[in-house]
Picture: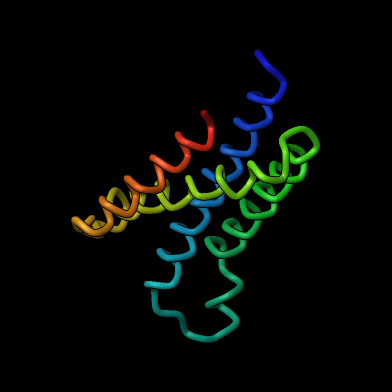
Length: 114
């Protein structure tokens, strides 16, 4: 496998786990807590920030090989991941406007990669 493709996949993996972290934080935010400390120092929130840290490490490692101009393009895949996981786990609706916006993002990623 081409080294650039491998590191682009590592970057995308980081974007994916970052999206998972966002969903975990949203689920944690929907819950009521007794105090502000418990709101921020609970297992879900701590785990989500550990995942964010891992996603950051993936980005750092990937940027050693992929060009800086490719990073924001790959990062935009996070919108797609979050929209899908929000629909799947949070039962959020995906409107026609969201589908149009996500389609434009996918088209942009494809055009850039060509």
